[in-house]
Structures are given as C-alpha cells and as structure tokens.
Length: 213
Image (cartoon, rainbow, N blue to C red; front, side, top):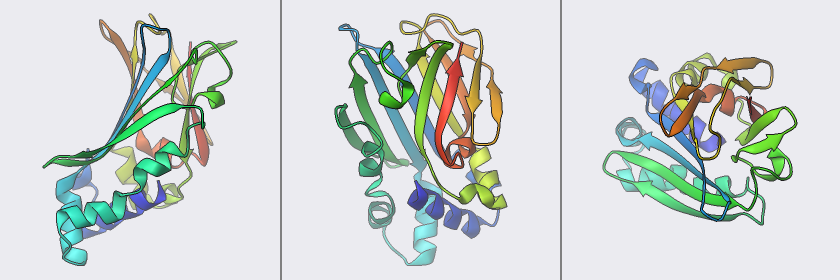
C-alpha cells in the first residue's frame, strides 16, 4: 500500500489541497456466502483516473496507461500476498475510462465458523464475543503527515455484509492501533453496511479489526 499512498500524496501536492481529492480513493469490501456454505469475499479498490492522470502529465508527461501501469501495476500481487496460501483467489484489473484499480474475489471453506480472524483475512469469522473481520495491510507511515491524513480521512472503506451470512448487527466497532471507533451499522433489506475513513486502515500499523456483536 505504500506505493499507492505515496502516489496519492503527489497528486495532493499537485492540487495543493485535498478538497478536490475527496472520493478519489475507494474500497468496497463484500462478505457473502455461497450455496455450499463457503464464505465468499470480494475486495474492490479503485482510484478515479482524472487527478492521477493530471499528476502523471505534470510530472513526466507519461500517458494515462503508462502512468497507471508503472504506479499500480503490482498492487494485485501485493494484495494476494496478504492472503493465506490455501485461499482460492482471482484478481482482475479494473481499467475503465474513469477509474483504475483491482477487483479481488476469494473464498474460505467454513471460514465463518472455524479458526480465527487471522486465518481468514477479510472474511467474517465467529468469535466467543460475536464476529470479527481482520483487515491486513495497514503498514504505511502516511498517517503521520497532515496532508495525507486529511486525504485519507475524506475517503471511505465500506464493508457490505450479506444478511444471509449475518442477519442482524446490534453494534460494531473498529479496533485500530491507538483507538477504538464506534461504527453505526447501515441496515438495508439484504445487506448491512459498515464504513469508516480509509485513514484508519492505512495508518493502522498492521492488522485492523472490525468487531461485530
């Protein structure tokens, strides 16, 4: 994730303010179930192209495709390295006229009821106190920079949990490196949405935990 955030900070410098960057980085994290009882997970991380394309042009004149390929071409492998070797996974590159990123799909046999959250990153795992989701990968030092923090606080990490996996949620909280943040569940007919600023993921210093009761 360090390469991604460093590039985002270059973009912030080009615009001299993070206001114009609100919403340019987004993570959509879905947890559902398959007919055979496996836990299905999908993580889609995307960036709006416009500000990054402008930054690339201003820095060295690279074309859009060259800029994105050089800066983010290895992000899918970085993501896969965070998953256990036994995880069945596929990663597709997202490359539309408007956004760039990756879309990963993977599953865990019985992951909702067996082992610990560390055994099934990004999945919903039952614990003695309720459920947990472990979100690895937060090892960047960008949280120490005020501009980086403002940028990351304005962009959302959204977890969408199918109610076929977890019918109801009374409360949820994000357990970060230095604090615990309450999350207000957004309950819809078929899913529950939990969201928080991406800042807490990037600056977590390691694994981030979402605790659900």
